[in-house]
Amino acid sequence: MQQEAQRTALIIEDDPTFGEVMLSAVHQLFGGWHSVLVHSGAEATEWLESGAPAPSLALVDLGLPDVSGIDVIGQLRARFPEIPILVVSVISAERSVLAAIRAGARGYILKDESVGQIAEALEQALLGNYPISPALARYLFKLAGAAELTDGLANLTPKELELLRHLARGRTYAEAGQEMGVAISTVQTHIRNLYRKLDVHSQVQAVTKAQDRGLI
Picture 1 (cartoon, rainbow, N blue to C red):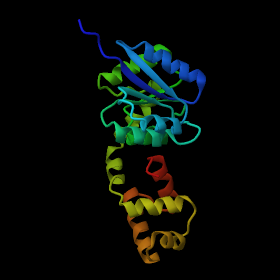
Picture 2: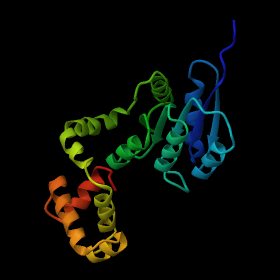
Picture 3: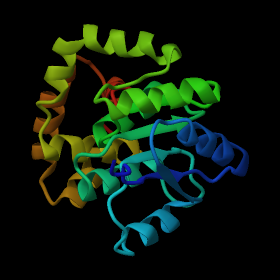
Picture 4: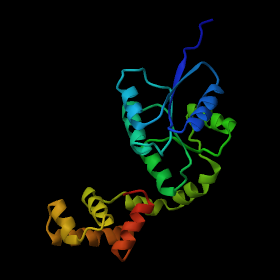
């Protein structure tokens, strides 16, 4: 009988203690597994560019010391479109959950789960499911219930999103227009469209809602 080929799990985790937890969870998976543990976004990029074969699974911490774990997820998804990518993090903020999923994560597990629970989540991901820690389920159900609003937010244009980012940084309309290369009248038109699409009545409300939905 031919032996099953060994599969690779890429673990991106800067905390040594949690790194060992992730290694233990992977070792509980069925079949032959080899784990690669790196401690920063830079190390992950170096590994990706080394020509190593595609991993069968990736576990990513969001709180890396050099870059956002969200950016790492995006790099992984661009390079390996089909592999399961799971967030394993202490961060449970709604914005982070949504941003990770939009970047390409297919599961989100909190670090207070046991090794066995994390291993079970990894097995579910390998089966094509989307595991999520129970503590986060309430938010995702709330998000699903707000589908109509989310659809409206998805209609924001690139220029409207760019304007929101400028406003979030404290820019005035004139300063935002200058950086965007448009007249202030065009900025005002974008503002009116943003108010309508976001169903808000002030700049602060527009920025806050966009941030809450992980748009900026």
